[in-house]
Image (cartoon, rainbow, N blue to C red; front, side):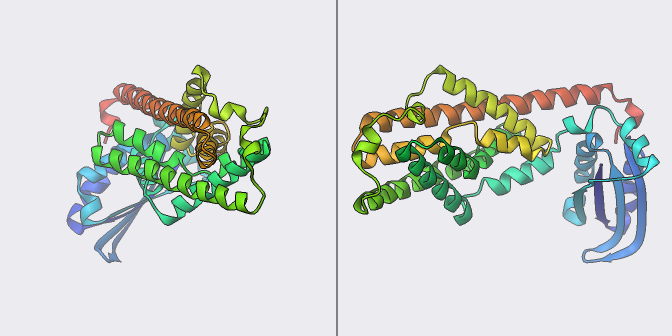
Length: 315
């Protein structure tokens, strides 16, 4: 269930209430007349089944409530209410399958911005992966994958493509490319510094690395794995299952490939640099394609669900 807290101008409250009452899957409607001060108006709270939430939120925005008032949305982790159970049963589909497009857009918008924190996490993850590459340590590689924040802008690109928002596509793409470029430059410098300290050496790059050699040897399976990870990551993001998203983070070699390219470049091993770059591009492309197709499939699925909803039950 979702909990909505609305601030409505007094002249729109009746329209908002009519909309909520005509929406299947709502419960616990509360109206506090004149309770709001900034902006002035009435306060309306209601719980709605997640699978009915996106359509209700869209209808509220059509009333310009996001401009003249306020729409705040919270997830309800536990609701002990027979009325809530009835609302969930009445709503079409399953809540775990529902996509809240406004919430998804907001989440990917925040995570697709080139910020100091984003660049810092990506740089640290790339440096950690560089240590794993040089030591041929798979545990460090897995740790670097989990730290990397690159799935945010990847999901942002897919979301923007589906919502047909080109400016958001370019912003997410800029965060992705600029972030990796900065992280790889910093990692190359990090590699050079550790070489001066005697902790890194050329033989570590050019020697046999049975645990990490796959990072710079892309093949068709690289795209397949990235595609499957993109599907899983998108599904976990739309259903808020963070555990699955962590699993995705440790299954694709985006950050390790960037790290290997930076370290190899610092030692003028251009064959590994090229191979790692191809691995990186294949993984990024696979995730974006998979994420976009998954969101399109979910959009089609919910369009079918809404088509089956009786006209009287729609907002």
